[in-house]
Image (tube, rainbow, N blue to C red):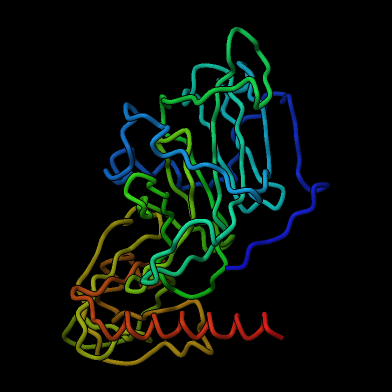
Amino acid sequence: MADKQIEKSQIQFKEGVSGETLPEVLGENTENIENDQILSEQPSQLEEVEQYTVQDPVNAVELKRLFLDADTITKGYTVTSPEEDFKAGVVDGAVTVPVTVVLKQIPGWHIPVDKTKEKVSYIFDVDIRACKGDTNDCGFAETTSLGVLEKPIFIALKFDSNNYRKKIIHFWNKPEQRWIPIDTTTDFDNNLARAKLNLPYARLAVFEDPYIQEGLSSWYHQFDGHYAASQVYKRGTMLKVTNISGGSRDGNFEIVKVNDYGPDPDIHPDRPIDLDSYVYKHLAASLGSGLMLVRVEPLEKDPSIKYAWILEVEKKEKVKKLAEKN
C-alpha cells in the first residue's frame, strides 16, 4: 500500500482536552474482546518497553499529539488521526497519571514485510508517554516512556481491501524482527480492524490471512448433510464455519463440506460462502434472519489457495510498479 503524503498544515496539535468520554467509534463489540484473547506473544507489561521501541525514520509523519489530563483519563478518551484511519482509545483506568498520546505514520519501506502476508493498511505508531516531574502538562520534550499500562487500550486501523480475507492487526517485534498477530475483530461497514493492545508503545499494521475468509452467508436447501457452496475452496474441502455476528449464538461453529460453487461474486460480492439450511439454522437459530456474518477456515490448509493468493499479490506489485514508471 502506498504511503500517503501529508502536508504540515494537516497535522493537528492540541495541548488540552475538555474531558470527552470514550466515544463508541471503536465499535459496539469491543467489550466482547476479553483480556485472555490478546495473543500471548504480546510482551508482558513487566518487560522493558524500550525493547520494542523503534527509532523513527527520518520522514516519519506525526499525525496527532494530544495531552490527556487527570480528569480525562478517568473518563477515557479516543485519540484519532486527522484522516480517521488510526484510533487509540485510552479507557478509564488504563493509565494512572496524565499522559501525552502521540500517533505517527511510518514509511512502508522502513520495516520488512513477510511476502506470505499482504499489508492492507499504513504502518502506524502509538506512543503513550508520561510527563516528567510534577508538571500537569507537557510537550514531547518533557515526557518519558510510560512503561506500563494498567489496562489494555483499544486500537482501530483502517484497511484498504474489499475481499473476504481475514484482517489481522500485527505489531512489530523489534527483538525478533518480525510481525506478531493480535486477536482482531473486523468492522466491515467502516473498513476498520480493531484489537486490544497491552503496550504503551507499538508499531502496528493490518495484514490479510490468505486462508481465512470473513463475510456474510445465506442458506440453500440441501438434504442429508453439512454442506456449503464456496467461491474459494474447491469441492470436497472441509471447512469450519463460525458465527461471528455478535448475537446470542456468536462463536457457535459447524464443520461443513464444500459440494458446490457459489454464491456468484458478481451478484453477491459480500458473501464468500452459502450454507445448507440445516447448518445455517443451527448457527443462526432461524432461517428467517436471511444473512449471517461468519468466519470460514479450512481444516487443512490447501497450498494451492496460498499459491493463488501469492500470485495475486505479485500481480498487484507488478501493476503498481508499471503505474509508477508511467
